[in-house]
Image (cartoon, rainbow, N blue to C red; front, side, top):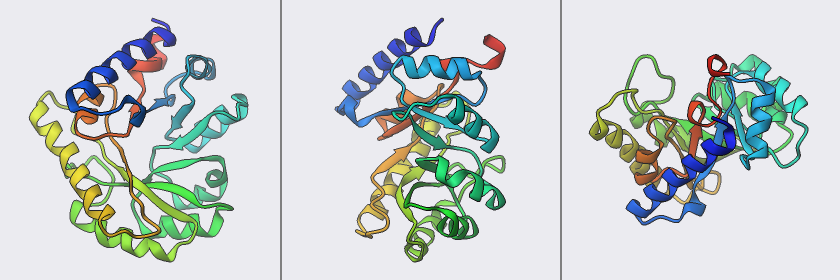
Length: 228
């Protein structure tokens, strides 16, 4: 199936989830995750109206950004970013979804030529296989980021377990939303924390019902390298 048809399906699902949760579809940003597909396939996403694209590796992001010379595209980095690679990527991205340590924040602050909007990565489920801060570490971590003038905390990010238990998935997303609300109530200038980056191909409808503002869609949008 081509990307345009996939976008239509995803948009219908977004509409349904927003109807259920009494939300405005304009609140939802679709981020096309293109890490497993070709540059040509990523370009198809742009042609289908997906202007937010994401990569999880520095090399993949720089290559695609060079080839997709479109000023309308907003670039998101969603993978673990090593401090030593910050200098090579920080001025090529518009959002970072994986800030989870002060050493990384320090390097971003040092290397960035602009204020970088960041999502704090939270390991809500506590899985050993996932990166991110524990829930009880997040508030103090965000507070500490006020010392870094080139970082703005725009939201929180998490990944739910890849399971069929909808109740457990909802609980993970709900806990992230509640944590976001707690930070918002602080009214910190450096951390407006308005957004929730949560939900992928298998669970984005649930994420929207629980408050997601940014959904990261890969296989359901552009497929994988194996399907091309």
